[in-house]
Structure formats: C-alpha cells, structure tokens
Image 1 (cartoon, rainbow, N blue to C red):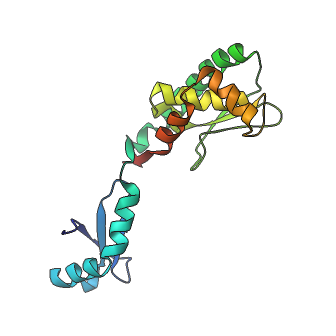
Image 2 (tube, helix red, strand yellow):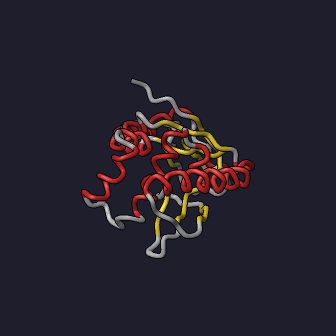
Image 3 (cartoon, rainbow, N blue to C red):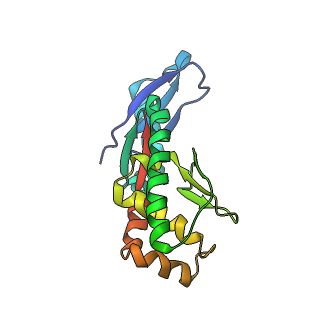
Length: 179
C-alpha cells in the first residue's frame, strides 16, 4: 500500500521530517535549500512507514469539526450564551445553583467546576452538536452535587443523560481542526 503524502518546503527546516495531522494527512517537510529528489523523499517516507501507519490508525474514527480562526470570538460569545442557558435549565432540574460561568480556551477539558460552584466551559462547546453540549453542561452541573467521579456522580448524570457512556465516547472521538 502506497502512503499518500504532500511535500512542503520550509526555509526554517534543517532536516527532512514527516508529520501526520489529526485528519490523517501526511506531510513531508523538506529544507528549502536542500530539496531532495522525489526518490529520496519516497525512500524517507518508506523508512518511516510503520510510524506513519501507526499515527494514521490513531486518527481513524476521529470526527473532525472545522473551525475558522476568525470565528473564535463569535464561538466564545455563543458558548457563553449556550452555557448560561443550559446551565440554568439543568440546575433547575437538579435543584442546585451555580456561581459564575466563564468561557475558556482549553486544550484537553470541556469544562470544570470549582469548590465555590463556579463553572468553566471550553468555547469549542458552541461548535458541538446540541446533545454533546448538553452532556458537557450536565457533567459540570452534577459536580455541584458530587465533586468527584464516584458512582453517585455518574448516577446523577444518568438521571438526565441515560446514554452518557456513549456520549463520552462520541465526545472523545471529536477533533477540532483550525483553518
């Protein structure tokens, strides 16, 4: 099986390197002054074959959501409105109240809940399908009643999101790609 790749020339690159992006694209970066022939690049890709295929396997099954960098301020505003409205809705269902809601740019978290009851959400939640955004909000609302991930916590989540396990799996499969 031949691995499809694109070649990118870079003035800053000191050596040839290969990258596998979250969408599965393979890019070979070549130093500008020392462009190799296509056969040299091809043999370099072949030498890295097992690593490349392993990286591609890791990206398989990921669901990309494309975001324009220029849209980030708008997403932050939408995320605040969404988080505020849905938090109020689910807080009423659970009979709790929360503190302030903040929107942040977090790499690995969708949300957090402080000991004081303040909720923080990732701005990317505004780009999620509504059922996943609701799961994120319910998850944090339930932390107001149980600040851990104990059985009690998951029982609380299950009251309004019975399929929370499938939704967590779906949420983990999403990857954001910026343009």
